[in-house]
Image (cartoon, rainbow, N blue to C red; front, side, top):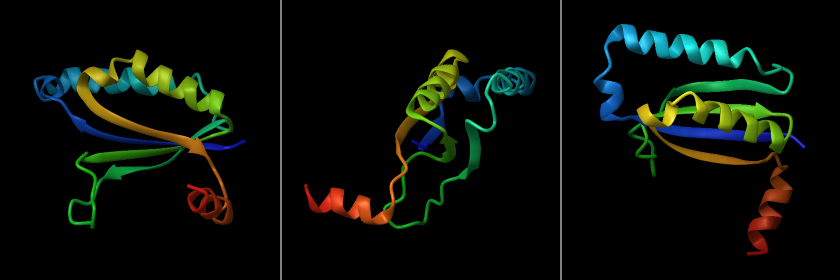
Length: 112
C-alpha cells in the first residue's frame, strides 16, 4: 500500500555555522545517497518553504513530500535520511502514513 512521508524541518545553529563548501559537500552526499533508491518505489513529490502566513502554519520553515510504495520503503527512506546526519543540521518532524481515499479518512475521523 502506498505511503506518504511528509517532512517539516528548520535549520539548526549547527547548519548555520557550516561554510558554503561544507553545505555543498553535505548535499552532494545526500544526492549520492538517493541513488540507492528505486524511483518507482520512492519519489519526491514536492519540496519548498512553508508559507508563514497560512492559517495554523507550521513553525518549521521547510517541507518535503515523498511517495513511497510501502511502509517499508518509507522506513528505509527515513533511516537513510537519518544516517546522513540530517538531524544534526535540521530539526525535523516526520509524518508518515498510508494513502487513503477521503471517504476512508473521514470515516476514520468519525469513528474517534
